[in-house]
Length: 594
Image 1 (cartoon, helix red, strand yellow):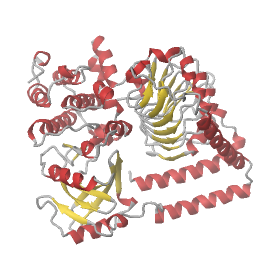
Image 2 (cartoon, one colour):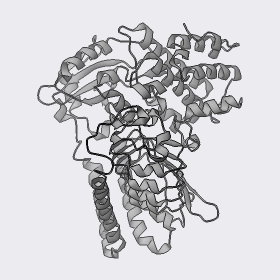
Image 3 (cartoon, one colour):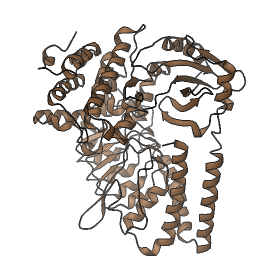
Image 4 (cartoon, one colour):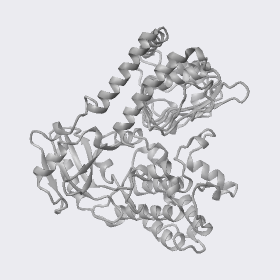
């Protein structure tokens, strides 16, 4: 769905929700329902898949909500991977019986509400893969029933509160890939966690990560009041807004409704003020570089088209930039990726590397046609793939992907990655293999995209940037530890991708993270019980048992915790061709290396 239309629909929905919430206050939706509606009004963007009805007597049938069958109190709020953006409402703290809060892998920003410390029955908090900032609330240390706390892959700063050491039931703790500093508390349960729980925070020290702390006079208690004070101020402002809304008269409600209609009209007609078009990017000295005659247009014609692009042409946003749909007058369509310049030395290095990427041509790679060198950004021009991303196909229209289609997609991705690793010059480590970086053409043939960009945009903290962008579930264990990418870290990510295609579940799907697992842990559990075939998506038609067994053998070795035990991508392609696409008894375990 078009992003601009989605945002307009989201704004319209929020207006309706606000008006209905205030008008129908007397209809007595449950207190938990009011808290969830307050949470929803703070969300400013989504994929449009949630249908929460304010007129319902309780929220128990709302998507992502689970209630106790007897009391009708909310016990689970699980809405991962819904492209939700906005701040987390402090009213989440009113869900007194909440046990699981799973809002991971969205686009939430702002602080973690300290009010979550009021949810005394919480057992699992999953907030990883967002853009949350500020400090970790001290109040989380009040959650005596908490067993899982994952707030990794955000932008959190400050110290780890010593109060978290009081969480005696904590068995999973992950604050990796943030910007935390200071000594890791060694009192209480936190001493039990290893380096993997803290990796990617370069300012941390302590026994858990074998880094000696310097005595600088600071500590968790030194600066803890300032973030908390800021949170309290924000909470007071939010509470004030709710109070004003609650006391509004019918006349004010009509005014709100009128403003909503007018605001939505203006939004749809004119768009946001901060992103009208790319005219500014391509004005004042922009030039077009074409690779090997791949763009049969004049620079003037291309720049003229670029100047007309605005939010209505956005077709995606990823870790490396915003993607636009570029349609030329002759009907040819391209994808345009906008990357903001990073530093003073950006141009020379970037252009040299782009020349290399532009020379790489392969059937299973997305073709880079050229780029626009503008004063403020680089605009990369790629082939347009009408089938969208594998992520969208798997998780939004999986009924279109039968067994043969999924095998062909896996094979195409494997061949593209094998070419990067073994056959192109120079060889390329992708570093960010995931379903959103596998694009599909009109025949559902796979193309690997964004190869080379991770290295191209890296700085001394590049591995942190990649993880924060939302690829946590695909990363090999050794990459989490060291930040050093190799061909074998790509192989691990490919193995996770295979499991995602087979199961139709994301690497950190809520159905098994509640048990402290990811998709690899889930597979390992099924293997120990000889139930590995149960991993297959029930919506996948035409599954062949022999092919499935051979493919599972490939995936199991790809996601081995030991890099040495993983096959090369050349070997993966060989096995896929000989044993998966044309099944026969597998000896993969005995011949996994070249």
